[in-house]
Image: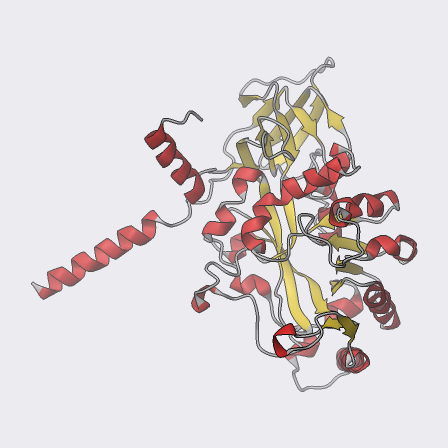
Amino acid sequence: MKTFKNINLVLILLCFSFSYAQQTPAKDQAMDFAIVGATAHIGNGTVIDNSLIIVSNGKITRVLDNSQPNAVTLQAMDIIDAKGKHVYPGFIVANGTLGLVEVDAVKASNDLSELGTFNPHIRSIIAYNAESKIVESMRPNGVLLGQVVPRSGRITGTSSVVQYDAWNWEDAAIKTDNGLHVNWPNSFSRGRWWLGEDPGLKPNKNYSKQVKELDNYFKEAKSYNNGSTKDVHLPFEGMAGVFDGTKRLYISANDEKGITDAVNFAKSHGISNITIVGAYEAGNMTEFLKQNNISVFLRRVHTRPNAEDDDYDLPFKLAKKLVDAGVLVALEPSGQMERMNSRNLPFYAGTTVAYGLTKEQAVQLITENPAKILGIDDMYGTLEEGKSATLFISEGDALDMRTNKVMHAFIDGRKLSLETHQTELWQRYAKKYGVED
């Protein structure tokens, strides 16, 4: 009898776990399909008001203006009537941590950080949880791709790019170990008010020392990788890519001095493939960034100003200032509750429209631009012939939370499930209270 009770308990637990698991990843595209009549936002600034997009074997084979005569036959393929709707490339979350933490308060589900100051050998992709319920909740807003970034230490480790419908991290990976991440020392710090210190900004007395430690580490790593030692040093080996140009160097820095010092530091080590992350004061040094060919992952748009004398709307209009100066810029969601808030990526871009950018420039901030910086623009980021059919169809403007209603979404031509824990709750209570969809 005891054995049967144990078996029943196991079965109940299995049923409970499966009921809360992510949907089974979509099957490979089996039949060609065409999206007809949608307003196509190509992702590079171009718009086709009445488009025809044909997808075969997971790739876009034709992108046409459907209002013009063409000799394309749509026989023997599925037809998606998208008249009055909008089609976009899949949105891309840059500098994100989706899949690394499921429940913040549960230590076993948190793979965000590692012990130690210098961790260039840490590979975030190994810890990526493809079955995360948080990752699943991105798809109904058109967020289909992302960069997975470790956070802790001075050198935090290497990031990878994934797609958000996969069995495991191997299936999810689009580009592994594409960049090394560094947290640049703060040149200023705030006093610890809880210890009775003045909470205002003051110079970081250890700044020069911290920069010197980082400089020495880079020098030692470069010497190791240029040498022929038989002793294996995994952290130094993890640095090799930034010296030979196969990895981009992402440096988190916000103030003018920090950004300037970080760029000059990287250049002094022969590194030119550089992106500044955060870049709060980048608007004051656009010419410097442009001259040094520095791209930017811009801090979350929906935040408050850092300083008392900053414009109240500085976070909202900073993207326009950088774009107007010719700096390659993409949006990133880091900050409080960043994993959950990553689903708001299109609305961050929408806010930049209210503060001066055009709709298509804003779309570029979360499609073509991050694809270029991440090194995946050969296949993702725009709706162009020969590229991956990673795209979605929305009833309205995808940058407006009132009209972003995704009807269909595809990754590599595979039609995705748009059901999530949130949509299940919506349906449950909509029925209870008689709310029409």
